[in-house]
Structure formats: structure tokens, C-alpha cells
Image 1 (cartoon, protein in one colour):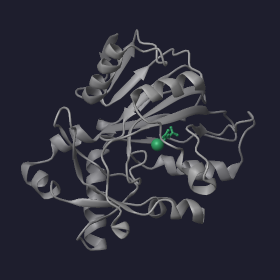
Image 2 (cartoon, rainbow, N blue to C red; image 1 turned 120 degrees about the horizontal axis):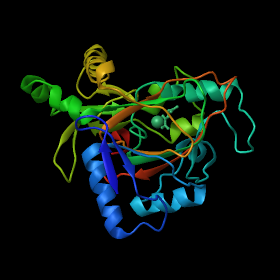
Image 3 (cartoon, rainbow, N blue to C red; image 1 turned 90 degrees about the vertical axis):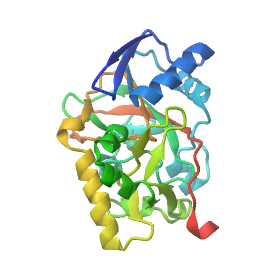
Length: 285
Ligand code: OGA
Ligand code: MN
């Protein structure tokens, strides 16, 4: 495995590792360790298929059920399609583009779930010639940049994450889907269990801070988001077909940059691995 760091403390390009179900346990341990270190990994030229991607995903942990399909129909599927191409290969309509545009807000995948995701694995099959990039920021380096006073202010806080809050301004949320995702409480500052590094855990699904008024909540959450997503801290991934990108949802935020969906085809396939830290659903306790 060859590792080329992309920025200080965040992001790396990895060659010499084939991501499929045949990965050795040594390679897997090394992969887990570089996820902890770099948070964002780019593997160019992967000869990927859905079967390989799912087998690889299962090596890292439990695949996450795709929440839109599960919430609306009760069926468990493991792939999310990112972009504008339907399963039958045809181009999706403007409604799809509207729903997908929620991904253009900074977020951590599944932060709204009781057990949020560990990593997302996204493989590119078709990409636009213009736009359609994905941007990433590290919430660990963001935490490190806070002053001691700011760290002490955020360390003890808890945040409600709520999919209906973040997504209903974008497009209506199906009632079954909404009912499957009650707001959930997570610490504002997470600690990596292996490295003990702290990071902020915010993003578009972060609705309010427990014990704060709405105005105080939004003021702090919005201020933290502005501080952490300044242009100088962003790593932009410009997709090439064959790229597989893995990111650590525990300690990064990402967003799509948008593209002309009427002009270009964009098809990426996403799987996620379930994390092992559980939040609290207040009304269920
Ligand atoms: C994702 C995501 C945004 C994009 O894959 O989880 O938010 O359009 N993608 O690249
Ligand atoms: Mn996402």
C-alpha cells in the first residue's frame, strides 16, 4: 500500500490496495488505522462492481440499510445511488435533482440516525465534465483550531440531529420515512475511541443544542459551521470514473457542489458501514 497525504492531518491517496471481499485481515487492520489517521481516502482505478463493493463494505462492519427505501417501504437495500441516473440507466427527473440537492449542504451521513455511520464508501461510474465534485472538511482539525475557551464551551454539549428538520425545507419528506427517523441526541464533541482525538460533530442535520434556546442553538451551530468550512480547509474531490472514496463520517463533513443535471450523467454508488456509538432518542426513553 502506498500512501500520499493530501493535506496536513487530513486526506490521503492510496494505491496498491484492491477494495474487494478478498482483503486480508492485515490489510483491513491497516485500512482501519489509516481511516483513523487521514479521515478521507481516495483509491484511484478500482475495478469495482456492486458485488465487490458490498463484500468489501461487509469486511469493515455491518452495511447500513439505505434509509429512504427502508423508511418509505420497509425494504432493506444497501446501495444509495448518488447522481441523476436511475437503476434502469435512464436519466432521472427534476424531482430527483431536488431531493439530491440536500446533499449540497455540509453534512455527515446518517448523523440523524440513532447509530450513525462509521464510514461511507462511494464509487464513481459516470461523472460530469463540469461540476459534480464532492467537498470535504475535517472536524478534527477544526476542533484543534478552537481556542481552549471555545473547546471548554463545546465539550459538554449535546446536539439534536433531525432529518426532517434539515430536509423538509428542500423537499417534502414522506411521512413513513419521517416517522422512521425521530430526532436523536449526540455529543457535540466526539472522541475517536482508538486515537482519543476529539472532533466536532455538526452539519445540516444538527438542529439544536440541548438546553439552549432556538436562537442560541442556531447562533452557535451556524458559527461553528462557518468556522469549520472556510475555503482554506476544504479538500475538493474531482471525480474520475474508477475512483473509490472512503470517508470517516464520525469526524468529517462533506457536500456535493452541484452540476447541470439536464446536461451531464452522474452515477456513483454508495454503501455505508454502521458505527458503534449510539445516540439517544429522547422521546423513546
Ligand atoms: C454522499 C453525498 C454528495 C455529492 O455521497 O453521501 O452527500 O453529490 N454526496 O457528491
Ligand atoms: Mn452524504
